Image: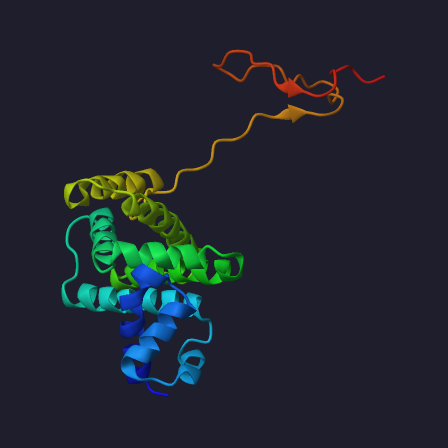
Length: 227
C-alpha cells in the first residue's frame, strides 16, 4: 500500500460522489476506473464512505496549511482568521462537502466529524502563529470550531453572487464569538449576596454601604433576630 495508490483511488472515487454519494459505491466505481482490485478498497479506506469524506477533508486542510505558509494573511488578527477560513472554503467543492456532510452526519461517524472540524481549526490557529500551551489552546480551537461549523452550513445554502453573503456571515460570526480579538481580562463583578439563614446579631445585611442606596438582598428565609 502506498500513498500514491490511495490518492489515485481518492481522485477516482470523488468523480462518482455527485452521482453515488460519499460511500462505498463511489469507492467501488473509482477502483474500477483505475483497475484496482476491489479487495484493496478496504485496505485504503477501512471506514468506507466516512473514510473517503475524511480523506477529502484532510486533503483540503493540507492545501490550506501550505497556502498559509506560502502567503500568510495580513491585517488585524481577526481579519487573518476570517481570511484563512474563507481560503479553506475556496479549497472545497460544495457538492462534495454536502455529500461528505451527509455521510458524517450518521451516528457512527459523529466523533470523526467533530475531529475533522477541530483539525481544521487547529490548522488555522497554528498557521497564524498560535503557540499557546495552556487552556487557551483548547478554548481558541473550540471557539473557532463553532464558527467553522456554522459557516459551512451557511455556505452550502448560499446562492449569492460570489458567495458574498458567506463572507459577511464569517465577519459577523467572528465578531460575535470574539475570535482573534485581543482582550484584557476584567475582574468579575461580585454576585449579589443570598441570605439563606438567620442574621448574625448586630449585623444588618440590608444596611447600605457608605455613599450607596439601600438595596434589599434576595432571601430564601426571613431574617429574624436570634433569641
